[in-house]
Image 1: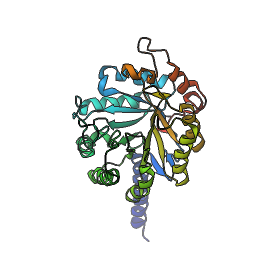
Image 2: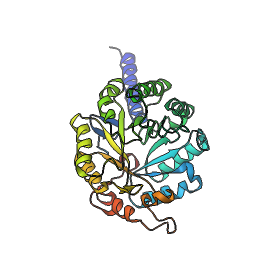
Image 3: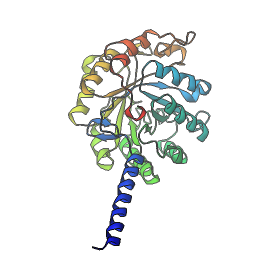
Image 4: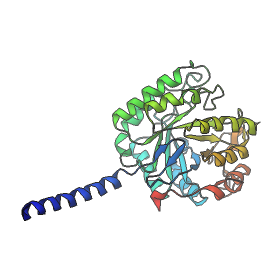
Length: 326
């Protein structure tokens, strides 16, 4: 081999090495392996988060995210609107929230709330409309795969939907989002207004994962989960099948009916699953015991807030910052 050939090969190898390094850094992302949510460095990440209702309290979101971070939450689930029921959260607003999540070092989960309870709620939009909204915003989510999860729609099927609708419509949604270029993990909410009392989601989970392995399933635990037995039975089913699950919403009560909140926290910790408390502040009067902080004293926790932050297996004990921010 002459010196010219050797020099060319050497420079080609060096160039290839740096292309590999740059590509690895560019495509670092959250990923799912079996039941575990992993960071780009391979560490297990357990979501310890709270819901923040941006679409109804737009002027307060930045302050709320700052307060959320100070209390130690590592994740925030953001309520957005595609314009079907409430004023549309446009590209600039969503970009601002992405920037604030980065500033306050929070993993962001973004959801469209307008679909809640379709078709039971005649005002609710469709899953298809939520997908169209995400596709309109696709460019601003490029490069966020290490810190953002797309929760396609909030509780997009109520109790009156046909049994197969959840599966059929979510398969279409996942295919469309992937075809449009989304590389973020996708989160799918359960039917029955999120509570999955009919146990459809875990029955259909395998078929969804055969289509796309980078999907996390979300159950909302309210009055259907008033005992430790019901909480354990549901979560254990997902763990036994090696499916990735998060409790996307829960509290200590719901319309005056008890919810086994402490048991949800304990069971999620036991099976290494994430949870997201509902919600930071702003619930209507009949649900104001679901607020984490007091409306009139923004820095003071409610009883529910004290439990989720300082209780057994709560935020103070179990929340760890995502490595992408370290």
